[in-house]
Image (cartoon, rainbow, N blue to C red):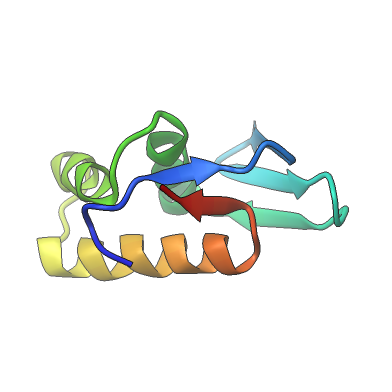
Length: 90
């Protein structure tokens, strides 16, 4: 997976904000997944059709974190979402 990749949310996935987190439901498996406030923001940017690089850059503008840390975290979340079949790589 690369930062240039764009992530597409699976059509069988529904996500809702609940308080400061996002709850994701895989309608096929019935499994729920939760994202904290930072993960929820990344999810919003992914849902908006941003590339992983654009997600990283937007997060850098919003949070006081190095690009290296953001890159690691964005790629880790994307890999986890792909592994759980909640998203695919375009």
